Length: 550
Ligand SMILES: *[C@@H]1O[C@H](CO)[C@@H](O)[C@H](O)[C@H]1NC(C)=O
Ligand SMILES: *[C@@H]1O[C@H](CO)[C@@H](O)[C@H](O)[C@H]1NC(C)=O
Ligand SMILES: *[C@@H]1O[C@H](CO)[C@@H](O)[C@H](O)[C@H]1NC(C)=O
Ligand SMILES: *[C@@H]1O[C@H](CO)[C@@H](O)[C@H](O)[C@H]1NC(C)=O
Ligand SMILES: *[C@@H]1O[C@H](CO)[C@@H](O)[C@H](O)[C@H]1NC(C)=O
Image (cartoon, rainbow, N blue to C red; front, side):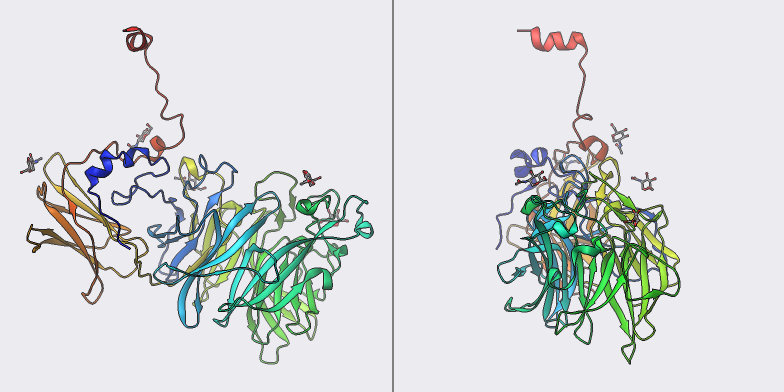
């Protein structure tokens, strides 16, 4: 659908530049966007892998308009921190676990969208899948009249999807220290769904297989909920990831058990448990090399030996527990969090720490986090509630580090998971163009195309009344927004063409009329934020003149 194209002066007259309180005008062509500024403290070098950064930063404060990314949303960035796609407005309410994947041979994007309960670390909503044109092609909900949680969506074999559910159920909890009034517990459920039909192919319930007895966060003092009602149900297990191996068995992470479990894909029985805190958690393994972990996230199968007796798994070891809103108790079992790779041997029943990726800064995340192994062996660790991401070579050398969002707003930014993926985006959004004539008489044309990865250069034309085009010139694409300078083109109608690597025209913008613009101020984040910078004092004399003159 094409919307009527207003000239910039009409937009100014409508007051749209001035009144769009959320935007920061980082991009002349997109005055509606306010994109997080990545604070890259260790820039990419030639050991950094190719691919784009996929993240969804959000504010750690409940009041997310005055802190953290004002446009909290899924984003794609280059490793230089340059915007590729702003997913702001593509998903509603709150979106997390944003990734690229493959469904039936086609590249897709997906994200959880729904409500967020930062005190208990839950979310309620559904998975939305977009195609490579950024069009919604599927909304996936949990089956069996249950509501999907935010933590996991994992596409298996390009056909099925793993999701999980926090299902409050009433239960006699006296055996676990509960009083008569404390009778609600969270059943940690996961489902494997057919992506096409939504049919539930497999469902697993923690209460059917794992006793609440082993929880590292007991019902009292209630850090994981104290069971008084269904909203306050004791989250004894806190499932936060599900994966499936080639043999059809599952790997799940149970944060409040500080343990990982392998689940038989046919019977649902626990095949093994890897306990993280020796002495506090039981384990099927003796740890040959001593290591511990706890309150972990994002467990994944990495490789299986041909005889299936050994498996390498990866996960993000928080080694800390606390709520996402950072209220309430905290538990720390290490100085910092880390990305871990562990080999489990189910013949000798040993578990061995293979690699441990430690943060370049002292980052200990009380919630969230992820660890991704890239094809070239590099590793991405995302530091969850600490709002940062690091890339390592396989050997552990840091080759990139960024904090998500910097500047005065960047305090307390969190990011659930982050990844690097190759991606090709072909947006159906229109190309955005803005032109301004400077005091010296130059015309500067700014162009951008949200989500496009294919444009290599832009061609600029003026268009006469009879529709013929005169080439003004071209610019190599320089980033999300590219500019082109031409002599005074006052009143000329201008269009921009996106040209790909083979010289093909991908799309053409609508016409924009070049004219002198009202430019309120140069984008200056420290001016644009908060109210205190807008505060201005008048001299007493000036105030008397204003208020008492009539
Ligand atoms: C549920 O229990 C908690 C903890 O006792 C309490 O703070 C909350 O108000 C209760 N909610 C409802 C809906 O009763
Ligand atoms: C582990 O158990 C000991 C003894 O019960 C307890 O003092 C400690 O707090 C526990 N640690 C964790 C992280 O739960
Ligand atoms: C970027 O992060 C570093 C390390 O935490 C910090 O010292 C610096 O102030 C940050 N820069 C900005 C612009 O926020
Ligand atoms: C640009 O051209 C217009 C129309 O010819 C003229 O009115 C205007 O003064 C020029 N602006 C500058 C800065 O040269
Ligand atoms: C932005 O505003 C601040 C506060 O008024 C000022 O100190 C700073 O110099 C400005 N920066 C730019 C680039 O204009």
